[in-house]
Image (cartoon, rainbow, N blue to C red; front, side):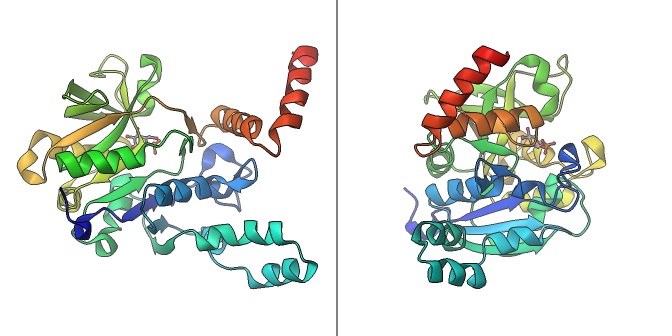
Length: 300
Ligand code: G1P
């Protein structure tokens, strides 16, 4: 059992990417701010961290990312207008994102890859295990993954990555793991990792989805990691080094996720996420489902 002093409390969210898949929407707006129903995608990710008990959040940002800081800060002017109008419901919605977590920001400067973004978190994280959440992956709030990963990290030590079985034809979009079973049904030993392999090179159809709980030894490894796929410093390559030599920072395990995940960095999946989450909302769902049923039967 780990003492409460060692409980994982910090989450790191890399958010420096340019979001070119969503141009022109992302020309002047960070992709993380695109709404999924009525909340920016990034708010779901911060809420996920907080729900898993991680209320200290560090965002790795870059140029043009100021709206992210504003979103998680107070907006006194708007609050005052809503208070004067007596609109308590909207006031609550405005305050939700600023009351959520203790937010910190650091700029990545040179965009040298995900591994480099994580390395920028070292001064803030220190020598405790910490979580990394990638903003493009949206995990359905009803399928908790991160809390399971922190529990697995506390039991097994080392680092823990989230894995999901994908269609082998799409494995080239992900980091891929060679894994073997443990005594736990949803936990695997990770022996090998390769970033974005071709279908022929892939050791399995287990893809890394954007959730990690990392031993701080990863920083030392990242410092020594040379640019990999795409000329970028890859987090997957650092995790491969940890997996192949547990003396560096403990073993690497995977939690196999079988819940609902949306890739909000992909336009088709982004639309699917909005439709599914809107259908399931208590306030919007009933009307929207009725409209959707009619639309599909008449127009499609
Ligand atoms: C990153 C990681 C990759 C992982 C993916 C999950 O890639 O490098 O290993 O599978 O996130 O979304 P990206 O999608 O940022 O290119």
